[in-house]
Image 1 (cartoon, rainbow, N blue to C red):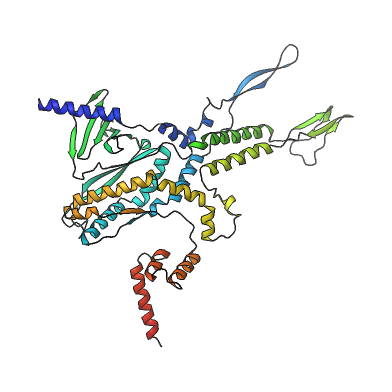
Image 2: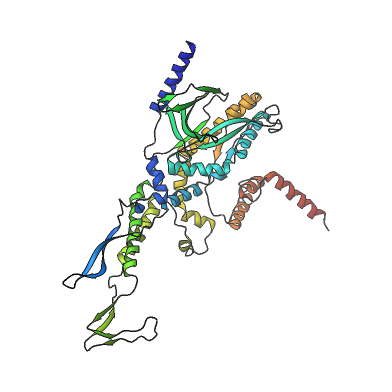
Length: 469
């Protein structure tokens, strides 16, 4: 009887997650728009092939050429504008350079900070954070799944000498084959998280549908066969939090300019079709030609009867309007998405600019990146840090009191560094009015990794200079 009740409870959990999970509308459409080969310009339903009349080489009884209808392929040019917008937004967010800001008050807090930093470093978060940002902005949803695994006892050194576990992270997203099923309460807190995915048995090649449901106490694993759900297998953990950091946004970065991108691809493709028909010169004869030049002959001569003439057809109305439309569309796409046009063609005309001048050039891109960091992405990074604090305390329970320490992310937007300008600035700040200390100047200038070590080296050099004759 108890087993029946447990089965009923797990079935209710599965139904609850499947029915209450918040779906992100537009994920599939966003993925197709992000993939250049899936653009409408490549689909015949949106850009059909052309029907043209071709002579068969035969004539009817009246001597007229007999023609037949042929289907010809058209030019199809897809542009990866969506990918470019996302890549540049992620680059200006510069999340790979994020650092943790904290002020440890004692040895335990310092150990906890060391462990959180080690978790992020060993999971290569400097690189994976950029991937997560790109997936959030293109797929509309992505998640981090954190889990523990056994490790040698010396892994944590003095920070957790008795622990044999470390934290690992896996990225989940629709493109990677995961169906994400988050369930929130009325206050917006994540109370359940479902992950639906497929696995394949390497020996039998049998494919299995799986469903994992995460709670704050542990996760349930189910296998599904059609409408049937297997008995759940429960695995507990002691984090006290759901080990999922879920990122989502309502619309992709290029949503407002998607029609402009589609029009740009159509305009360029149409121009390609026009060039195919009109790119080669067309020679029109008036009157009767009595003799033709040989193919490849230099100084070609044509013999024409009196009153005849030969002229090349010139396109009096050159496609200036087409060029203007293409240029305007490109400008609108960049401007409306706050994406800088930093192609070689555009940048070579700027000349030699200082770092501050480039900051002004990239002001719009910086505003867009900061808006993203101040929104969902930044909030999720803070959740990641809070979870890692709990996980590290679970690994080393002696640090429980240190969990109250405040650790926050510190972002620095991408900018073009001007070393001479930076050095001059911090020298001025450190001298004159003495606004900051020498240690702060060395640290903020960014030329060295450890300001304290560098200050000691400077003192050693000063002593050597004083002692030297």
